[in-house]
Every structure is written in C-alpha cells, then in structure tokens.
Amino acid sequence: MVAKEYTKEEVAKHHKPSDLWIIVDSKVYDLSRFAAMHPGGLSVLTDQQVAGQDATDIFFSLHRYEVLLKPQYARLQIGVAAGEKQKIFPRAVGALSKVPYAEPTWLTEGYYSPYYKDGSLLMTTIQHHRRFQVAFRKFVETVLLPDGQAREEDGKRPSQSVFDEMARLNIVAMRLGPGKHLKGRVLMDGLVKAEEFDYFYELIMAQEAVRINARGYYDGSGAGTYIGEPSFIVVVGLAQNKFPGLPPVLNFGKPPLRDRILEEVLSGKKYICLAISEAFAGSDVAGLKTFAKRVKEGGRDGWVVTGTKKWITNATFADYFTVGCRNDQGGMVVLLIERQEGVETKPIKTSYSTTAGTGFVTFDNVFVPYENTLGSDNGGLQVILSNFNHERWATQRQVFGKPLTSQAVIRSKLAAMIARVESAQNWIENVTFQMNNMSYKEQSVRLAGQIAFVKKYCTETAQETARDAVQIFGGRGITKTGMGRFIEHYHRTVPFDAILGGAEDVLGDLGVRQALRQMPKNARL
Picture 1 (cartoon, rainbow, N blue to C red):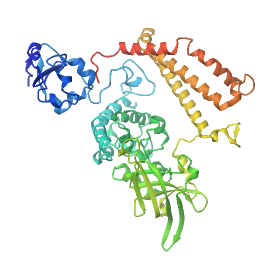
Picture 2 (cartoon, rainbow, N blue to C red):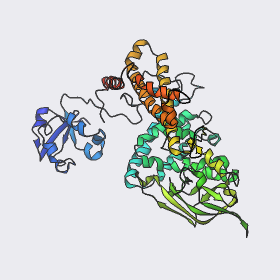
Picture 3 (cartoon, rainbow, N blue to C red):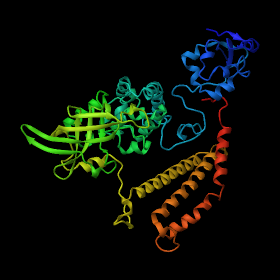
Picture 4 (tube, one colour):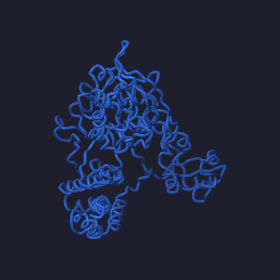
C-alpha cells in the first residue's frame, strides 16, 4: 500500500494541541489524540520547533529508535513527507552494528582474526564461527531479549518456552562447553557439529547473550546450572551464567545418576543450582556449617543433611541442589539433593531483578540416598574447587603469622593486577595482528584510534599495578635497594610512560575523535 504524501506546508497547518502533526525521518505522524497522553507532557509537543515541523533531530535527542516501532506509536503514522526519503534505519534483527567499537574486531569490516573462522575457505574442514554468531544473535534478539525485558520488570522466572527453545537447539548443552555431553546432539539446527564445537563458540554465546541488557534475567536463565565452569567465568567474569550445579554431576556423579540428571536438565525439563555459599562461609568453602550425617540403618543408606545456604542463584525454582556439606567423618562431601519435604527456599531481595531466583535454602533433616554422593565421602573439597578456576599462590612474606596471600585484600589486588596485565596483553596482540594484515595506509585509517586507546589503557593500568605492588611489598616497595628495588623503580618511573609517546588524555581524545569521524550519519539509538 502506497503511503499518502503530504507537503511540509500541509503538515505546518496542523500545529495546535487538538490538531497536531509532526514529521520524523520522512514519516508524518498525527499526534492529535496522543498529545495529551504524551509521557513528557503536552508542552513538549506544542513547542514551535515540534508542532507541524520536521522534528527528527529533536525526537532522536530524546528517544531511542525502537519507540517508533512499537505498535501504539507506529499506528500514528498517516503518511510520508513529499520529496523526503527515510535516512535513519534501525539495525536489522541479528545484523551487525556499524558504530565504531560496537562490535569486537573480528566482526568489524576491514579487521582480521586468527581465532575465528567465517567459512569462506576450506568449507569442508573449517569451523564456521561467523555463521554461528549470526544465528545465535538472532536467537538472542528474537527469543531472549523480549522475554528478558518482560521478566526483568515483573520479577518472574524466565518463561518455560525460552528453556524449551534452548533445549531444542541444544543451547543448554552448549553452554557447558565442548565435551562428550554434546555427542549425538544436533546443535543450532545442525549449524555446527558436536566434534567441531570449541571454546570460541562458547565465547560467542557469552558475548551475544549480554545483549538482553537484563542482568537478573541473564542469571535467571540458567546461572544456577553452570556457575563455576572455568571457561565461561573467563568469558563473562561476574556474570556467571552457566548452570553451575551441573558440572559436578557431570564430572563426579555415578553413571546412572549422571545420565538421568543430565538429560532432565539439558532438555529444559528440570533445573539445578549450586548451593555452596552460607551466611558465615562465602568463598571460604572450608568454613561450611551445613552438616551431612552418614546413615546406614533400617533399610536406609545415605546421608541426613541439616543446614542453610544463602545467596544461591536459581534456588527459588531449582529442582536439584548440588550441596557442599561438612560430614561426620571430619571431612567434606558434595551431595545432589532433590527438592522434597524438608527442603525450603525463600527469595532474597538483591539489587537486581528477582528473576534470577536468588534465594535462601534450608535443609531440615533431609535424607539423601548414598548414590547421590558426588565424588568420594571425603572428597568434597576437590569437587567444589574443580568447579571453580582455582589457582594457588606462594609468597615469602608473612603477616600475623600467615602468608601475605592469606589476606583477602592482597588476593584481590593480585587478581586485579593479573586481569589488567592479561587484558592489556590480549589487546596488544590483537592490534599487532591487525598490523600484520593491513597496509600502512589502512593502519593509519583504522588503527590510529585503537593504538591510542591501547596505549592509554596500558599506561593507566600500569600505574594502578605499580601502586598495588608497592602496597604488597610494603616498605620494601619504596626502598631503592634490596628485594623491592625493582618495584620501587617501576613505581617511580612508570608515570613517564603516560607522557612519552603521547599523554593519556590527548591519546584518548584522539581515539574518540577518530571514532566520531567514522560514525554513520544515519545511526540513532
């Protein structure tokens, strides 16, 4: 159907509250009945630069493009402006953004990656990361995003239809990473073979999933099942959106139990969470107080569990709980506990949506069959630590009779230092790879901003790392001789790097200005 055309002179005649038209990107809208209900007030619409005028610039300074796509507003369009053409187009579902730095470099035109393959060469043997990314982004934007925004608002758990679709595409299984559990499964409608699935596919899933812009929902759509699986934590850091209760079952469960639980969870029919943290034992798993007593009498062979768990993701709707317990043998055991009489969960209000299902769990004399033991009777600590990215540190310095690294604040500093160094190293390697694949002219156009940013990042984070190193070394860190002399030297000289080769602020401004020059003129939120 051809839209009716109106000249700007005709539109200008309709500038009163009861008869109000405007133009937005070549489209003519009749706001007469809507004006009084405008969330921003009537006065905004009756402004002389809006009423009866082309209000494109003003509209997009106040609204995201998606507003025009909502049915209640889209139906207000009555035609198009004569002689005008639409200039602003929303990004198509699943499509890539043209905005600088909106996409990782491997998805940005003109850049290269040694890690991801697009299938353009050696089609029979290469892994098609790009095709997978396209399909998964469409899934995120058509399935997860709408449900995520709705559930983030009402606080309800993610819709069962979402889990069903994830199960059909075997997304739940893929979120466990590569492994034998994928064998025989059809992944993303056959887009990738189980034996080809690698950690870069998992990385793609992690990065694309954050597009739902709903952190509580992000955790609620399966965080309880995967939290703690190392590769995913590396990918998304604190957003531990994996079903963390599942890896211990997969890796330590007896075959009959493992196979049954795996199938129920991967099919989206049942939900599992990891229950380790307690009110007085967060990261200190050795301080757990939940107690499991071994019983073997009256036809019963198993454990009786009593205790509580706190801040457990997905707890409020979980069917299974992977639980760390102290046992009566002086050790630690991990048990798979099914929701039953004696198991009670209560929601805990957090700073994000209750759709995450974060809860307080109580176990009141709950009997657990012995076959639900994960690992050995006293091997619980191994099971728990294997579920996290565990690293051991050694140090010579003692504080209060203990190694310095026994202090949480020191471990936190070390973690931050490692994260900064590793991220800087990867960024540098990425830029170096681009340089290997670009002409000098291309580098000037595409890499000047990147190099400015990476230099700024490296010099800023280097100073943070130097300060942390001095804190760790104490007096030695400010002494020019002895054990801390290299720390003292680094701390004293590292600020030079922030100035030599371009001051941080200047380089940052250079990078942003280059990005703004490349900004598409038709890009709007």
